[in-house]
Length: 314
Image (cartoon, rainbow, N blue to C red; front, side, top):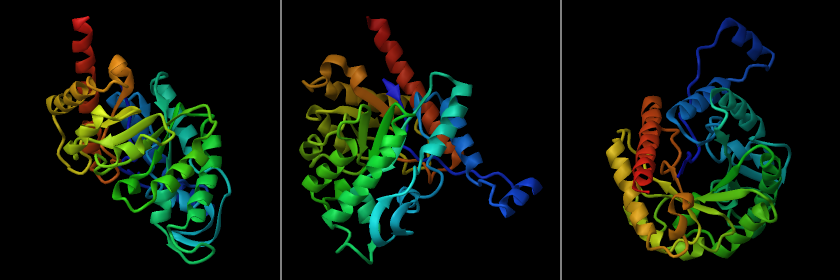
């Protein structure tokens, strides 16, 4: 059972020194560099196997719309096109820090999905509205180019599509958009969809991804999908909506409950531990830094306990 994160981490900024302020005057100061360092160090120290760069530069929409042609903030003012790599620089920085702390740690690439970006912007030009197929596909084409750059440096790429749990977007269009991003690329893809997904699992099973990642701590009803899911499972087991830290026993109990249900899944029950990734329910950006760290630490401890107990039975 590999441990990972969904993506975002609390943003911590250091107090600016005199030299930082001088750098800022010349446009050389990166106010988010320290936040990336903190996110990486905390994730590695917590024992996470596949970390993120923390997604510290804004919300999951702005990180991408701020760097694509055709957007002005969250306003669509023209045809959407890729300009330059968006997250690669931060991924490389995170990877360099992580390797110094633990050479075995890997870094994942994370992009926000085309339907979720489309749903979060105001269309003022070129497209009809934020459900226009052409808008969704053009965003997907731009993200494809981002992924082509990212894949050189990461072991897995996660596509965040939380909007799919709302039913607001057509699944056929969403699948075509994901295909644009992932087709013929030799790397594993995960798709994260938070919220209640127990009514749409058959639709999600049809997506061309290797892993479906969902919330199980804050949405216990989602446990129902584990008998019918056809992809590897990203198992969200700590609630990122609450500021209390779950105990190791609480997390362990939930993971064990999930594993018991997965034993009934004919597609996944042969290699249970290889078919499940352990992670938080969602991003942790809004949590206090100590809470986020301790949630991750307890999650890793719970996972190690389960693996240890399983090994002792062999």
